[in-house]
Length: 371
Image (cartoon, rainbow, N blue to C red; front, side):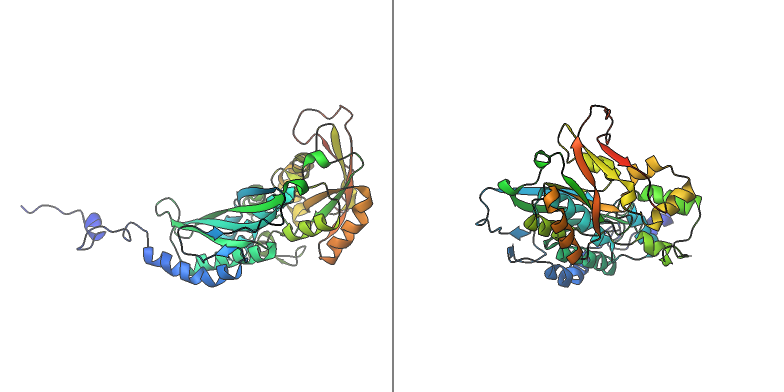
């Protein structure tokens, strides 16, 4: 009697046996992706870049002559579950902007000028056109930040990720002179907090936003929302504002003490990170109105204010801490650069009643108008 054949196994193998391609990894598609993204990466460059993409390592020759004591700063980040919205809408041209913003705006907090960035994209199945679209957004973000895109890595993970799924992260490197480095120790009582407006949710809190708007409220991503003037999906994919060049311009024009990048943890937790011991920050909610998306999440999910404020930026993407005599100049610089900005509050001496919990040294007072 002839041996039986496992047809499922037999059909998965050709006459040459197993291959990397049959396991789900397409090397040729990877090479196509590199060629497709090359024009975008080449636009995001600086004079210090040596060579192009495609090598084993990116090369960057920093010009250190203008630095007395150069300090390199590095930051690594991703965009969280915002990628789920991009994948659900099959719209991938802005998620790269979010990635760059999350990395370079952490660098600039200490006054570092972003020099270069390298990305890492993991996919279930490599589609060259999709990768090129993502990298186009990364390159555009690097151009906005004034840094070079120094290559990266795209990896196929068949069996671990769905065919249309992907995740991405990046590492950025910046430079600042030790004497010019911004840090909490420079902050003084009486300093003023100047807020810079966010462009929406940015890239934090999407697990809660998705749970409320998609799971609880059952709102379709393609549905038009009157308060937004666009679809829900378009609102949720609004790219994160990149503040790097704006912050560097502010540092050049004023005696800014430090910046606080308002990301995961909200205003209080991130602002506290740039306060030295013995000082507190007092911010007035009445100084701004959060965008409609925050009100929608709060109302549809019955999310209380404390939870909203520790999860979302609530409309504040970056905060500059400045001496009071520089506030008018700072607002003028930001207005000229088309960045929404306003006086948020001030720094005061601690009273000892703040409590040990994270964020307790930042006091949010009053109520938001029309929220």
